[in-house]
Length: 221
Ligand SMILES: Cc1cc2nc3c(=O)[nH]c(=O)nc-3n(C[C@H](O)[C@H](O)[C@H](O)COP(=O)(O)O)c2cc1C
Image (cartoon, rainbow, N blue to C red; front, side, top):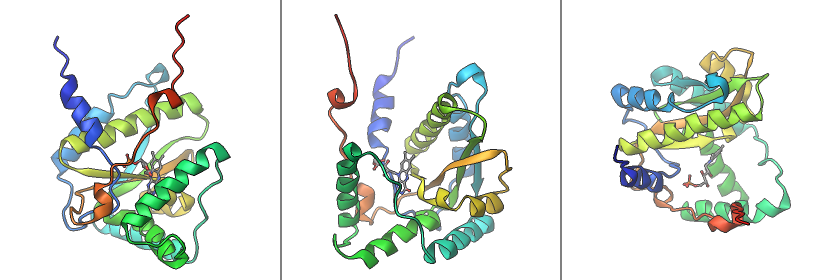
């Protein structure tokens, strides 16, 4: 069977994180259903399909964003510590993303306000959280990641935009209440889906990647 590598490659290259959605342009239900069906094809250890996704639209989505904003306005934690070897990449990303929003490097208040927009899912009309059972392990979270990657690619192929957001997971209780997430699940991160605002420069960024050799060891001896 011929493999249509080019279509997949194009979608992979096209996908990017969107940080300003058109809030009044909803995600067509048929496109969302197609994307979810495709994402469900992700592989998983023993085919346990450990991903659990909770999405809200309409009034519930609005309430969720309002409550997250209310909580985050009172303060949200700084980004979690990471090993020093990764810190430069994080700083570079911050400079590019906030720079594209016109936020000066030393303007802490402007940066806080820009970060605060995370908590309204950047205006995404469909938004929620991806979760996994508390007692599952790292290998299972790989499967959740595979589900999520397809759930970024399939919407991209359909002209939609996405944003994965660990930021909202700082308030798991708000997500739990707002999305009726059962206690046995751990909230891993948030997700927004919608149409990108084409006039927001940040949405057009193309974030660079390491050269393959920096991340991959290929031994051949
Ligand atoms: C697990 C995960 C969590 C993320 N959390 C956030 C977030 O809280 N806020 C945000 O603006 N972007 C977030 N992102 C988006 C990343 O910053 C983005 O994927 C990365 O900079 C590469 O850019 P690209 O997706 O445009 O290629 C997250 C991405 C992943 C995979």
